[in-house]
Image 1 (cartoon, rainbow over the protein chains, first blue to last red):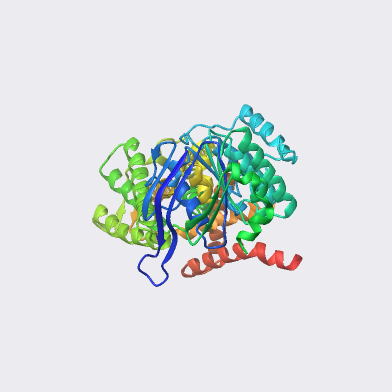
Image 2 (cartoon, helix red, strand yellow; image 1 turned 60 degrees about the horizontal axis):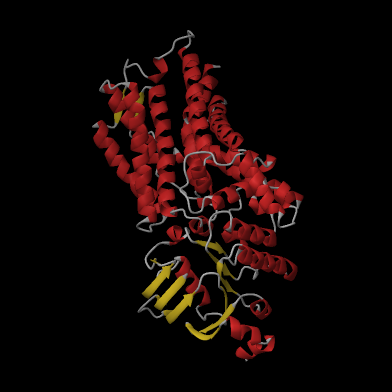
Length: 249
Length: 289
């Protein structure tokens, strides 16, 4: 599904504050794989994710998604395959817009935003049904501005928004970093359920080694902009939680 | 009484600026100073075409296109050349001064006895009352069009652009393009105000736009204060309040003049009035908490 070849990313090249974020990574992710990426701060995890989403374009190397070379395609065009959940709940939703309007935009992620009114009664009903599956009681608040909700609620809704339109790849950049443990658990369980129900190809960045152990079919450890360890499904089942802690020892 | 009627009419003429500033400042979060230039441009295009006896169905589209071009230029300079929005607006505004002078050929162009938009009906003996009828219809149509636009899928994407850029890009919207379209729309609305005022006062002047951005800001801020107090989320109501803001603003200025304040102090009074409106919610908030 995602094929990355010999990719490099250098920020501020040639200046005193030059940062070599990603230093030659080859990575092939198959359809339906749920990859968890761990690694210390500055190891290049987020840059790698941004290279896949198109928010950052590579210094050299190629990225292809579903067989299409997307190396120089901007992020808003890669949205035809990719949905994202950001670390900051504010980044994934528009605070001043109602929940309903946020969902409307998500429902036309891969389509053009036309000059016709798309929010009608049947759409409202569809959104209410979707939100009810979260069991948070938000289905009766769809006319409220997104900004009135808590971070956990917003992250859960962002996840749900990602599957409103045809989605093949889901990128999760530390989606629970800003949340309390209980909300974090709800969000992670929701994510896991959506990924398996909709057979999504997913990449999760996390600092929570427990989550890295519990979720996903493949685990990658990054450091200094390189892949240090790549543990596939069969090996991951043999892995013990303490082994993960030892990697950072 | 006629004095206050004139203020009301001016307020209605300025509703275009109020809606324009609402779009650029509130929806897109861009401080757009192009306003001063595009407002004059709207007036100048109107005056030049009217004195050349062009028909009305050409003048209004021409004004809209002129304003949109000015706004799009600011948008392109801001997004493509990555120049601060404030500076981009100032650059376009200053350039427009030359454009306006070249178009008019002189600093002031009167519309002596040329029939304008406001002469198409004469139900009342008082011409101001006829003007009022036409303005109300005109403003309602524009407000309806804008509120419809903001409710469409495109409009929702527009509103999200100023709110959360990372989100709207990940949902497949080219934010640069959206900002250019938004600034074009905002400035075409501003140019429409220039179009209305020029026909209302009967001349276009190179200096008519100086400080006009404060009229739009004042209107939007008055409306914002009410919106925040009453927690209004309806787009129709918000836009309606922008218009009310524009009218209140003109009425306050009329009262100021009526009670005998030196007209030379008008700009100072305007600035102080806007300052009071902006700081009112904060002052009352700090007392209660």
